[in-house]
Image (cartoon, rainbow, N blue to C red):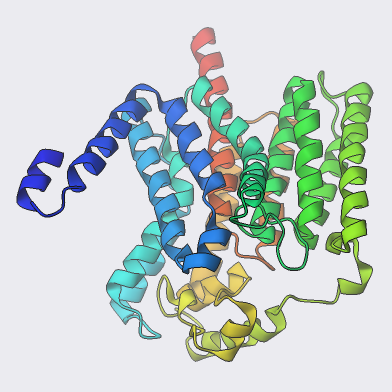
Length: 421
């Protein structure tokens, strides 16, 4: 293919080596799918969105590349391992909202191509759930989700050491390679995954990954993710007890987490950056009080069906004073964004499908795992009130974990049935 393209476009000599590398990567992914999953999730974690955006202004392009990598990975894994189809997968309501928008006519000056691109990007986090995963693959994905905030922080430190990008944002919050809120989201899902793995296996390494992820989250100064992580951890400690998660293991997890938190708290207090525990900043909304009324006004103009998939990025123009002040055009509220794109019908459909999907994915899990898995979805729903959760690259982290964790449940049930047959 690379030779054919190079002959067709003789002036573009880079086509051949690039396509050759791409083909080699595809073949490698088919033969070593777990390694391909490691590579894709590592790229998502280590892509320096924050640095590139501040230096070159092309963050949207990088986000699109990361989502396309997940789409390619999902396709290759389905070809390698087979498909597990779920009618409740959120790709279906997204497609329905897109179809309604096309039929009624797109609004806010959006083109069909722009809406289609948003549809593809919006569906990308959910595609791995279609893969019929074997043990090595789902274990690898879960472990990579746990490591993502650590990789991001280490990558940020590396760029900081060579003077290319500060690991701290201007307010002193830890941002790693992306932004403080994104790093906090990675850390939250790392905590969730670590707690569940520790509950399941009792391995000490998950105690330390929980502690490190919690410390990273505290250093980002993100209030909501920190609060949700504390609630999740406290709930797991108080209300669960398994063969691998008794009083001794609970004490180990609490002690390790406190060590990490105290260490980070000491450093951040000295730098004045401990925003997550700053009671004087609780009433601050980080500009949401300026952005949300603009989205509410747009919803009022088309309340039932919205303007089509992708319209959420067209509510506020980049030249608008609010966008310049906040440095973003995103709503920081997924329910408002979905209401703009699909109206009240669309957001209701999406919420309903997500509840059904969570129920279907968790029905085969053990009782304790089922409860905590559903609580993780509840945390995601709560986080969506104040943050971008479905369109950001952090969604790739959470839903990769959802796909892998539920795939393990399906696999174990099927193996038990085959043994009893």
